Length: 226
Image 1 (tube, one colour):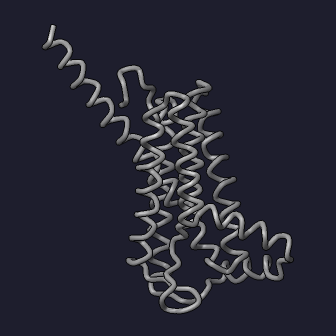
Image 2 (cartoon, rainbow, N blue to C red; image 1 turned 180 degrees about the vertical axis):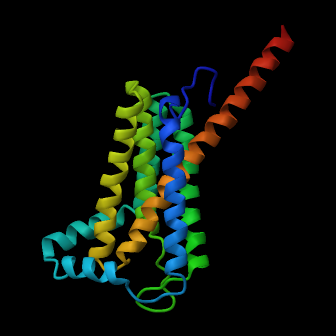
Image 3 (cartoon, one colour; image 1 turned 135 degrees about the vertical axis):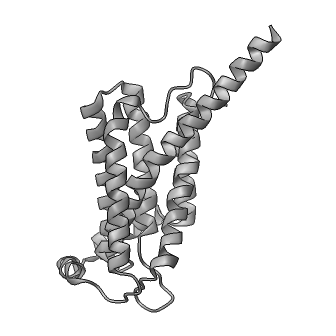
């Protein structure tokens, strides 16, 4: 499926920067998780941001609900299918694999962390840290940005800027929606954003490693048949 000529989903030019960024993001996730473990109230920063977005009018609430839908099962599945289809049309099978595996790993990690951290909102049954919606949309934006970087042949600085900008826009949009709707604390949103930043580069590296191994095995098989 990957093919010998399939480009790397994690461009070599970005590995130097995305590795440390992923490590820093993972550290932020852990620090916030420890800080808010078992908590059920907003922190000082949470309360201030909540106060700033309180009283959102009807038009903006509709925007927030529409954005929130993108992280719901139906909306998320639609986005994944559309993105996978686009990757395959562009003949980027590794990117298609990363969309599915990366999104799954990101959401799975966020779900596991919710159980481990145990932070709640609006009742003991509503685990909140980190925000799975924010993690998902950020992860998808990261994959698309990595694909664009490879397609456009961007260098280290331009490529890293594009990837981080895409992650920031997606994370900010979904994060705002979650906070505005009262579904998450702002620090939950930050945790979800950092979860995607930590998981996607690592998953992309693993996808490339596995694909390269399959390619080498296929090459060896062709040589043996000659």
